[in-house]
Amino acid sequence: MKLKLYISAMMLILLAGLVPVSAMAEENKEAGAAATSAPAAPAAPVAAAAPAASEAPTAAPAAEPATPPDVKPVLNTGDTAWMLVSSALVLLMIPGLALFYGGMVRQKNVLSTMMHSFVAMGIVGVQWAIIGYSLAFGPDIGGGLLGNFSKFMLHGLIIMKDAATGTVDWALFQNYTKEPGAIPELVFAMYQAMFAMITVALISGALAERVKFSAYCLFVLLWTTLVYDPLAHWVWMTEGWLFKKGALDFAGGTVVHLSSGISALAFLIFLGKRHGFPQERMAPHNLPLTMLGVGLLWFGWFGFNAGSAIVGVNTSDAAGGLAGLAFATTTIAPAAAGLSWMIAEWIHSGKPSALGFGSGVVAGLVVITPAAGFVQPGAALLMGLAAGLVCYGGILLKAKLKYDDSLDAFGVHGIGGTFGAILTGVFATVGATGLLAGNAKQLMIQLIAVVAAGSYAFIVTLGISFVLDKTIGLRVDKEDEIMGLDQTQHSESGYNM
Amino acid sequence: MKLIEAIIKPFKLDEVKDALNEIGIEGITVSEVKGYGRQKGHTELYRGAEYVVDFIPKIKLEIVVSDELVNKVVETIQNTAKTGRIGDGKIFIIPLEEAIRIRTGEKGSEAI
Image (spheres, rainbow over the protein chains, first blue to last red):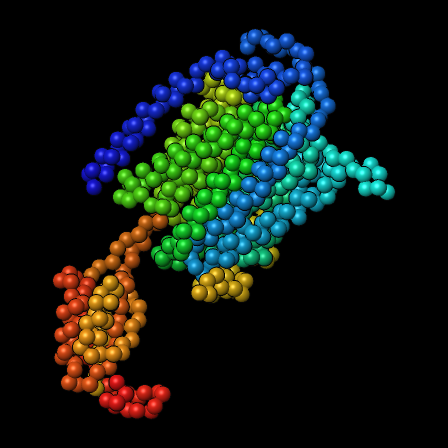
């Protein structure tokens, strides 16, 4: 026992020793970037970017560069190929989430829990095509609050040139008007659809083993329309009010994780604890499924984070250095977080658990999500180490406070998303600057975004939950809950072996 | 006739079965059970939630023997199933009223 303590302490000290090492590695941003980047695809920080098509002089870092002219979008097949793959990767995260959550509940509720993720794919998939995409990414109706209905049923994404012959043109999504690289807007819309699907599915973690399926389905539809679509608009559209304020969210720390985590908390107020919680034994019934889920989530997350380079600052390259950076941070942070959670648990509880390592990995992924393309690998390492420790602490807090966030939707996603969004304001050095780069204002903006998004999500979810609770009711009957939701909600049994 | 019920540690099953076969017992019924006596359970920890697991997996053997064989069988089981550590199990001897072979209808000592 003492030997294990000592080894863990030594590892922690070694990891802590990496802090000054990684800090030193951050220097020489400008010189390093110029030496390694190809002329056509600069991925250098803010001041040095010089697109090939522009005629503006390459400015010295301190001076304001002359604004290059707008260029027309040109379809980039490399970017399009990558975004198609990224979209599929993000979709894979939802069955991954189903496995992750499903393995953690009791056997009698495994199918019900997995259905929460799967049915979200169905409901949001349809809603997104009909109005979701338009509300989130359509032209602004005013104030940067919401998109209009002009892209209802993805109208305008396929341009009919000659109906008689079926000749069409494809609307293009060009992220940065000073660079020509573009992908079909259809691909962009589908990429974003996957984000919408998984965000609402994350909330189901708090509702497991007692929520009524019909109420959940209605909740999914209402939440994605009233909470997710506006938030995506605020943070990721150029007219969005939080985007205009300068809030940084690379792939969804606020839009996805904070919003779902805090909404889970709001729903819990009306839902209540599971029958028998916390005295009754509610151990995970199939942790191998959970670990498989972690693996699929990590794999898919590369699409989630690295694919978000498509909306990177001042760049039209989806597949390029920025995606490479996001890929790197999405490797390093969860690896570090898995270790730090595991070590913390080893020291605190005596044994390193598989569930602990897997949870740590997910915490690291969540925390790096808003920062993936804004921070460098050294910062990603630190954020990952911190993520494991902070989210582990969040879990312990939940055990002490005894509220029933069954699968830690708030503990990991809510806390992790908030933590990551704030740390982005500290560590940002690529495409934006944070506290450590001398820009203290960014941290304030991040805090504003976190509070704005968090309170909006919380209040609207309170409203939705209240209405659903008073109309159709949120919970199954006590007898049904005891018998199990697979049987009583779905007439099925997970394992008939 | 007697019904001998033996609760033993699961990893001892093969040893006990082979030893019983050697003394001429040709049929036993085995079930997987849970229980505890003086052997305590353990705790499991899942994300901060602690669970005490009281029950320990065991194997229950049921053997029907004629009265003359009872002592031999009990002795065999005791010798092979024993490890010397807490949790080795127990043997119960229950008087049996009748035994019937389904296929032929034989009764009593013909049936076992």
